[in-house]
Amino acid sequence: MKRGARRILLTGASSGIGRALALRYASEGRSLALFGRDAARLEAVAAECRTKGAEADVTVADVRDRRGMAVRIAEADAREPLDLVIANAGVSTGLSPGQIVEDPEAVRGALSINVNGVFNTVEPAIEAMCARRRGQIAVVGSMAGLRGLPYSPAYCASKAAVHLYADSLRGALAPHGVHVSLIVPGFVTTPMTARLKAWQPGRMSDARAAEIIMRGLDKRAAVIAFPLFVYYAMKLFSLLPPRAVDSAMRLFEVAVPQTHEREEP
Image (tube, rainbow, N blue to C red; front, side):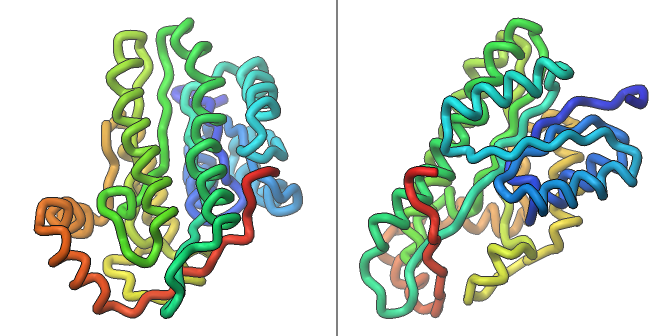
């Protein structure tokens, strides 16, 4: 490894923000442990990372599999101690115009990946990092975790949960030398947002998002939110009268595709 390089484990590395982060870190010559479910796409990302001079190993895993993730993360740490673990894997789900209730199976599928998947990624890394008294954990949240949106109840709930989890971990682990960062992206051009039919203010490329995230993580920022005007707008909405904000949000026609994911792998 190059001098100053770090060992990074990244879930959801085969597409979207995860792929963009892997490629951005690869250009820095860092050692990557890439986790994902699609072996072909994951290996393709790893191959791109290697052409940029990075070391990249691939692990096909489902973040819903608690025991499997614990084993595989321990193996990745044994190969080379992990400096940074990024819990990035996630899915979106929501309502289409005229739909009132989300499909219970889709709701539980989203929660299983977005919440349990974060726990299953973070928990196995904590003990080893605390024992070494160094390391960093990053959790990918969303602007949707700052204030409930009427067209995506379960997704908002899942992201709000991991926001509080990251906030809590940050205070709990700091005395042990482990830093925790919460990543709060707005709209980023990914396969996920390509399926979303809605106004997407401040949308940026996945490469630009990866650059912002990497710089924030290198500074060990507690919260990495972008774009800031959306972040502060969502913060403001959470302080305004709820019914007024709900009424305003219902003026926008939004269609959020239902996830096909389910609770069990």
